[in-house]
Amino acid sequence: MRVGLSTTTLEPVLTAGRHDGLAVYTRGLCEHLPAAGVDVLPFSFAPPGAPGRVSVGRALPLSFALATLGDVLLPASACLHVSRTLAAPLDLFH
Figure 1 (cartoon, one colour):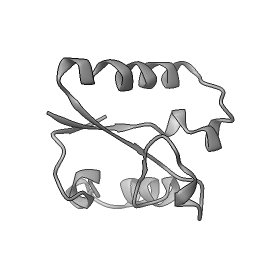
Figure 2 (cartoon, one colour):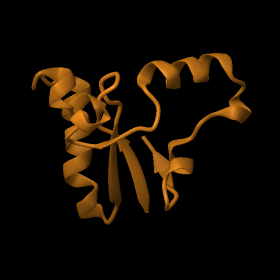
Figure 3 (cartoon, rainbow, N blue to C red):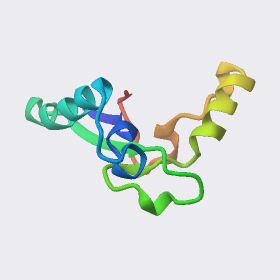
Figure 4 (cartoon, rainbow, N blue to C red):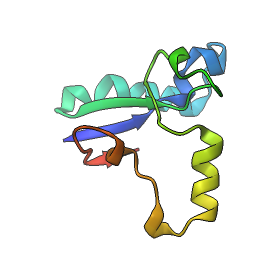
C-alpha cells in the first residue's frame, strides 16, 4: 500500500523545530507505518515561493493558500488530488 502523508507539521522551516501534538502523531506514523509494510511518501506545503526549503517531505504542487482556496471555491468533483500529480498513484493520502 502506498500512503501519502502530510508532513508539513514536521518541517523545520515552518515550525522552527517545535512540534505540537499533530507533529508528534505524524512523526509516529512516519516511523512505524513502514514496519507494517506501508510505503510512506511524505509531502509538505512549502513556504511561499520557496519549494526547495522543505526537508522532510516533497513539496506539494500548490501552496497552502491556493490549495485551500481551491477547496473552498471549487466543487468536490474538481478537487485537486495529490495522487494525480505523482508518477505512481497513492492508495491513501493522510
